[in-house]
Length: 159
Image (cartoon, rainbow, N blue to C red; front, top):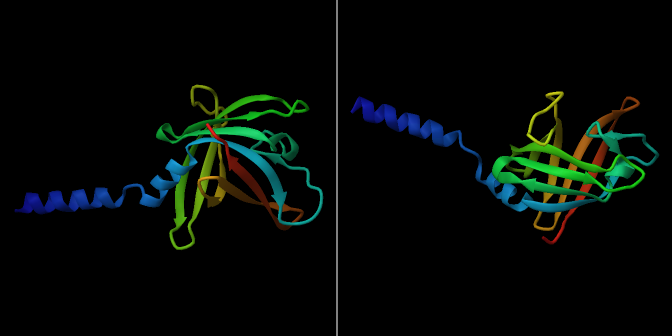
């Protein structure tokens, strides 16, 4: 009887540590190809930003993204000829932050083609909107002592 009770407690603990259902659903929605259609700021003005330690806002706009949730990997391609064009790889994780608001943290870590990170660092973004056709990431940064929210708006592309 003690063994059965111990087994039941262990199984219950493992089940409670599983991935939330909403995160699983989000991974199904995010799967596929997206275009980063535009990037906006919470404040008016001109800002010199480098996104994901890679390129400027102008370079990222109209970039194409592919998410492969079964192995938490993906790639994005900078298409603007005035920028360092080409494909970049990353791994990602979606973490539920608040089930009441529906907000998630989206963790993105740049890697090489084999999934290895040179700097072993990533970026935490808020996945503030996700539907079958649209996705929005937000990142709040410090701009001269004041918070500035960068919004990255994606549109799902037909495969």
